[in-house]
Image (cartoon, rainbow, N blue to C red; front, side, top):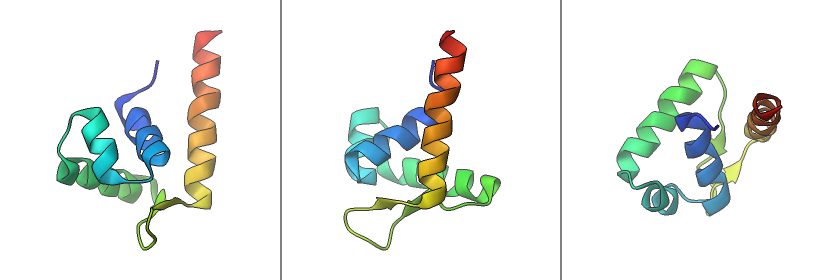
Length: 77
């Protein structure tokens, strides 16, 4: 089962947009952005490159998403 932050990260990565991801997740876009900024600060990494349009996943973000999926696989075993 995905944790809430995992769902947020994966949906943003899929949509390549905070606005579209927020719609899919049924939350306000500013709340989603703030949540991810706080998470990035907590982890000490940038997950998304917001300077590009559409947004891109950083190398650290790719590794984090890979970890999320691996962790989920382990939980299911």
